[in-house]
Image (cartoon, rainbow, N blue to C red; front, top):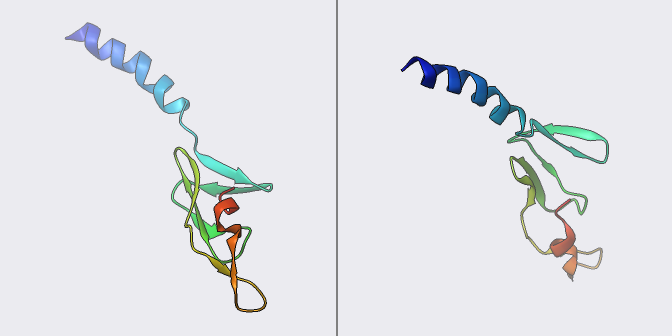
Length: 75
């Protein structure tokens, strides 16, 4: 049992050290789980372990029509 404890002690810190602790977008750091307005200002971006995700809502342009830029909202 002792070799297993030693193995866990040696490997576990290395595994957690490889996980990102934050996302950096335009020079701003967000913690994992933080949500913030996407660049299009109508979708919500979220910092996750696998990177930044975004909602995919169609944005209204100045004339009240749909702006198709929602597909490029994820940063």
